[in-house]
Length: 295
Image: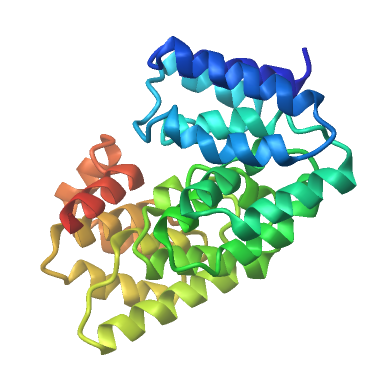
């Protein structure tokens, strides 16, 4: 069984648990028709009509299934996918993969699809064929101000970390900061941190402070490997904040840095140091708490 078939099988398995049999039968019939058709018309119709048969409720996945999806395609996460996304992605994988005709159909869908159709397309990037040729489309997609679409590209998606050049990667991360999206859900964030991004993050923080605004705590994760006197001065300001979540982020940044003066500064906050060492403070916890505080 090749990867395409494995993903199809996994998506169908995930849908069958919580979906009415008539919807599953409709999906199978449409997939077969798409595979056998010489025209993309049946695909366009089924992709649009899927909303009549599948809800936007999240998929119900066990921990084993979450691990299984990542084993099929590295970094492939379905925990934040809904049933309609999964059904549309299933249909996508039955579209005949002759490159010219495939791209003609996909480009038309990207350009005419509604917000939820584009969400499904962008989230499915890691399981689609011809991925390197989809890079420009993904980069253009990040220019959107629609959170639903931006999240589909940037969060829980291995595609940007695998393919985005550094400048485009930095733009994606900065936009996530600007839109206050959860950075802990950006795959490959730590591996792709770079000095230019650290400088951009610091500049952004100074702009926020100058305007009398707070800085999202997760931002300081970006400067960890590049800690120096300049960023340490930023962290001193963070540690003098009255916000407990900022203290947690500052402590974790100082702890993960190899910069000796950062370790010395953290020693002045023994309770926070103890929490970090015991795993009581993590970037995921900080990100979740920050997002919860905004609701």
